[in-house]
Image (cartoon, rainbow, N blue to C red; front, side, top):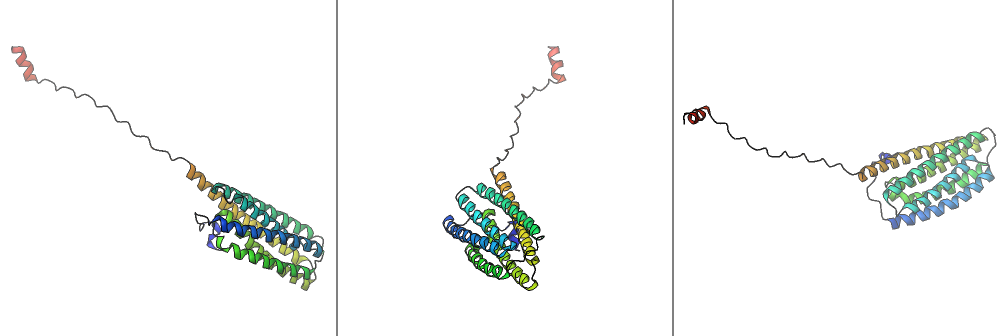
Length: 242
């Protein structure tokens, strides 16, 4: 993973909204279509890794929708939306991990050929989205969360293809369970990164909005009257003689 994962390489000015909005609309459409394709295929093949991948497509479609909603808003709302998306990504990761552990006790053998064909199609779809989003990968927390979702989906597609090979070769369902668990862990890792960067941006914005305390000027003391010089002893003696 690059050094920009912590958000230190993010520019302060986002790219033009018009170009980014068109990319988000195209990505939303692709992900929503692939969600339906993978959901139906996961049920037909009995594959939990395909099911996990379909949930990722649905989550990404929702993320793109949220990104479109906050694109023209203030920076603080972008950071809040990124934090909310990080929470959703974390919840999806936990649910997929729990589902994988639950189905691991069933011992069902998924259909490897369907897994391989659908994961190849999903890889092509995510590759097209990644090419469109590449120019925005170092944006603010909201843009970075979109890039991380797409990157993790491509890794997940490759993992599902490996799981299909494992199921086909071993004639067992455990490769499918292992891949689903890995995908869940990737989602949890991305959620942590997005939430951490969003919190940092929110703290920076709060500090920028806080008024700077101006030091109070020190009071200038009033000028004290200068006392008259005391009369000398010689003057007093002269007065008495008179």
